[in-house]
Structures are given as structure tokens and as C-alpha cells.
Length: 176
Image (cartoon, rainbow, N blue to C red; front, side, top):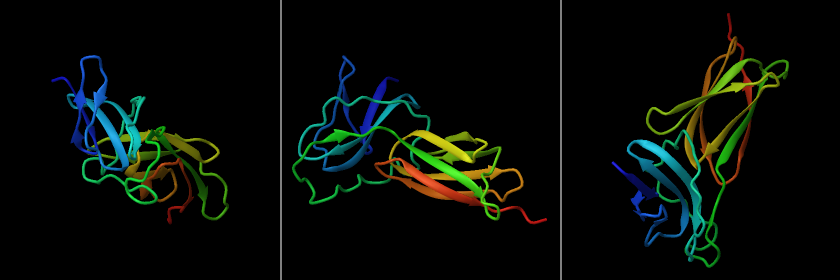
């Protein structure tokens, strides 16, 4: 099976030189996803207005948003179809910090696991200053589970928009 490409769950055309095209795309924030079989080859978030989007470069990711195939394109600020440049966005990150509920000291030696579409998961270490970063994300819905020894495991629903998401979580110690 060869490559296939979609914009907001609508198939596009891939040409023999590797370029691609979508027709009659409504204004809004869309996600482009290219597959080879079941493997994601590359993705790009794009804002479509009343002009073509040129120079789209697909970027690698290991996880797609949970709502990638069900969520319609997000509306743009202002009236639909308003004039202006269509453009691509860089892939986004969730940057988090976990603090102890009592001491407000950084939590140490834990993990943040992000879940998206299907069974895809990615686990990132929480470093000694309580920070973690989950890079290379498309806009959309994910769940993030924080797991730190001695603390209650918490899962949060997260929506990534068009900018990196910065979050602070308070870790709740397990009661014994």
C-alpha cells in the first residue's frame, strides 16, 4: 500500500514527485496527516483562509490527537473565509512542571505519559526540577497521565491549540 494523505479527514492527491494537493478546503485550522500503510509519515498544522497554502513541510510525530479523525476543522478568528494569508504552524509542545502540594518543591523522578489516537502512547521523564516537555504535537485533544512515586497518579484531558501549552500541576501525596 502506498502513501495516502488527508486534511481534516478528507483525502488529498499525492503526485509522483512527492508533492500533494487538496481541493475545496474550507477556511479553518486543519491538520494534514500523511500515512504509508498504518504508519504516520508526517504531519502539519495549517491555517486555511482564502488563498492556497504553499511550502508545507511535513514533520515527524509519534502520536496523533485523540480527535484527529472526528473533530471538524477549528474556526479561525474573525469571519469565515476572511482575506489573509494561509500558513503553516510549527508542531507544538506541552511543557509542564509538577510541584509537591505542601512544600511547593519540584517533584522528582517521575513520568508524564501522553495518549492520543487509538493506542498510541509516549512517555517522557520528569526531570529533577519537576519539568517535562512533550514535543511534536498537532493541535487537538490528548490525555496526559502524571506518575510520580509516592504521589497519586493523575490523568488530565488536554487540548492543544496553536501555541505551546504551559502547565503547572500540583502533586498530591498518597495517603497511607
